[in-house]
Length: 270
Ligand SMILES: C[S@@+](CC[C@H](N)C(=O)[O-])C[C@H]1O[C@@H](n2cnc3c(N)ncnc32)[C@H](O)[C@@H]1O
Image (cartoon, rainbow, N blue to C red; front, side, top):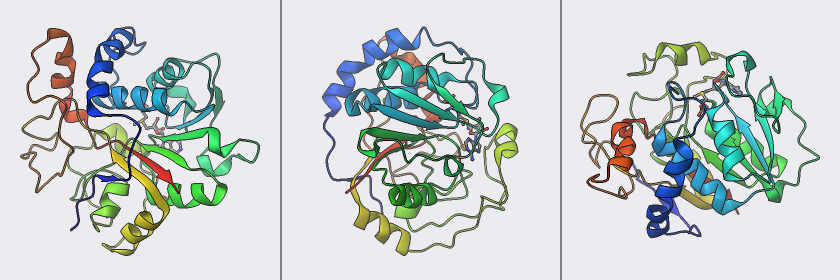
């Protein structure tokens, strides 16, 4: 198994991440959905907000809305951007943006020819096959991707991720995933959850097409994962956390929600 956490360089440092946390927390305390179970929590909300601020796209395509917290976050990260928000079930939304354009469709069902691909970031939080998203996204001309569900190797996570691909792990769709909530089961679309045998070709493909692959570091790393086992480098290779101890009271949300980190990543095609 190979462990790749980064290819190429991003335009920010871990120091900048640390400096940005207080500004993020000020925003985060005003989030519209206080209980976002089933959606992003503080570690990935911070990552998404920070990376979008840095990438400054003119367009963001969000796939996987759930209650709408991530739409709100995107709006606040890049207020000037045009947001296209997709979900196969829009009825769950609690926060509905006045500026986003909504689609009750899969990303592949929408015609994106009018968009300037160089000015667009795709944010996928829809638990679908990331390899397929990036392969077809590349064919369509998209270059910049954020994948929220970047599960590592093992019988965990409900979709094929870039991390699993880099680890040669493949993906087995018919197992009883450890720790996946019942609501996640509802989102499983058997037709999309195709088994992928462990292989090196997908990792090779990603290494060839990607200029950047970057796993956003956790702010704080717990000793155990959400799956109840030890969070070691052997089991779950992870970028160095920004903090090894959380002292400030206002930072404690990162400790409380540390297990909601699932190796969110940024990928940029050459
Ligand atoms: C984890 S939730 C999204 C959480 C949300 N981004 C947040 O942070 O609050 C996953 C969502 O993906 C949606 N979904 C499932 N399959 C999808 C697809 N093919 N295209 C778009 N959305 C999909 C589900 O309906 C669900 O609302």
